[in-house]
Amino acid sequence: MNQFDELHLSPEILRAVDEIGFRELFPIQARAIQPLLEGRDVIGQAHSGTGKTAAYSLPMLKKIDTSIAEVQGLVLTPTRELAVQVAGEIKRFGKYSGARVAAIYGGQGITLQINIFKRLVHIVVGTPGRLIDHLIRKTFSLDSARIVVLDEADTMLDMGFLDDVKFILAQTPGDRQTSLFSATMPPEIIELAQRHLKNPVKILLSEEELGLEGIDQFYINVQRKEKIETLRWLLDHFKVKQSIIFCNTKVMVSKLGERLKRDGYPALSLHGDLRQSQRDLAMRRFREGGRILLVATDVAARGIDVPQVTHVINYDVPRYSLLYFHRIGRTARAGGTGTAITLVTGQEQQDLQRIRSRTNISIREITHSFGPRPSKPLPARKKSSRMRTPREEDWKKRLRRSRRQRRGQPGARGRRFSRTS
Image (cartoon, rainbow, N blue to C red):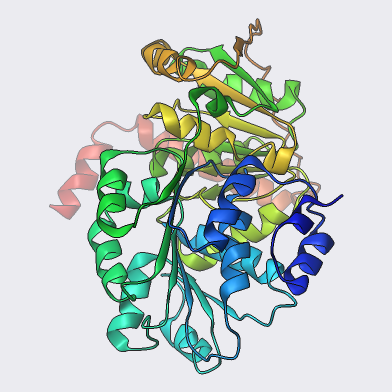
């Protein structure tokens, strides 16, 4: 029995859900879909990979009136990659509903996006900055956007989008339905909820649920100078095929990505300083699968939903403990299994303890004893097969003899300088 059949969704939506292969409701879906269908505001605490996109997308699609040529649904996301990911998911769910979806984000030509709105658009998924650009240009209006979702709200507000979010919400109807999904509940989110949500249904995770069952979690103690060698050992020992390797800074992402490529590993780098075309290329290659390693920052990795990811490796321990759960949620997607490994230096021990204190799931230590890899011998230089002629040999000998004679002449250096003085 398909549990989605028990929800009051349209036959068109259920057909798409069935084709995708959804059968069992995830906890966030079971608790959020019905209140959203009833028109209630919702605050949902849920990590990526737990089915929250479907939790807010299916009710939104049910309520969209495709006969009205207006933007009726809006989803705000913190990053371009997440905007593209969410828009793609909504399109899949709405395949037979007739609802048209547009992704709006920075880094893509704005003229191209303006042309999208020359046709019918019912749902907009976008980043705050680019969305405001379009509102100022009057590319489209949010006067009919009565369903608004803030996805990854904690990250969005941490990136300084609070004022932008408030501006955008002010452009929507006062009687809109607003839902807010976040992995954590910092004070900014509580303040936003109190000001912009009406008696919301709160769906909150317990501390135990932060453990993300289905993920084998490990850590390995290392000295900082041994990090790269330890990482290479892990990649070989665990036969890692498709992995995301997290670093705390863009500079470290670039350095590590280049180092892995020099060492012969199929590595790609992903961070905010790359051009959009470079980011799109990296994501396209990563989604294609096979043995590939994506080295990324936390922000750039938002929106990566690739079921084939078998391992998440924290090259740097995250600065905030809850980022750890964001990171490792990139594996074991949609109820699957995966492995998370964290490299911990002496200075990062307290950060690891804070992470362990937030979950009842064991994070086990990997012990290792290995020496440095033997350096690969340099290939022998090939001797030239070209034979020198006797005339060339004589010329070389005369040149060397002339140099020896000049070096042996007293005052030669001084005479040379005197001519140029």
